[in-house]
Length: 96
Image 1 (cartoon, rainbow, N blue to C red):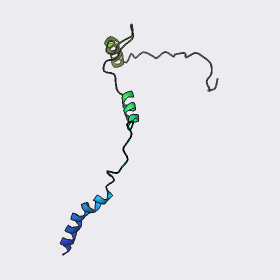
Image 2: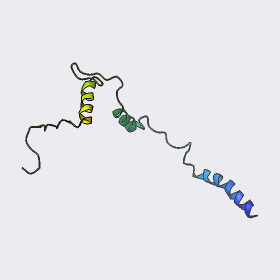
Image 3: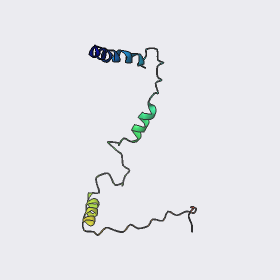
Image 4: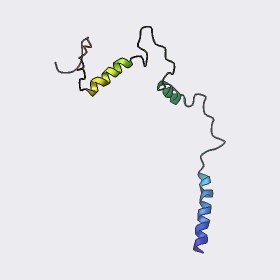
């Protein structure tokens, strides 16, 4: 008897959960612009497979010699010291 009751509850549980279904045929239709924010954000983060570079600019993958030289300096512990860059202008909020 106990086994029959448990079997009945296991079989009835999915039927009881059907009442919790939130999908309805009477739901209002979504606008045509639904999801545009996600599409816009994805487009911003997508790499252009055929970028257009301005004349004289270094194109991606064309500076292998400088990359190889940097790796060689890193491996031989002769890394160049970064040079400070002056941004110019006035302002700022730190102590002088």
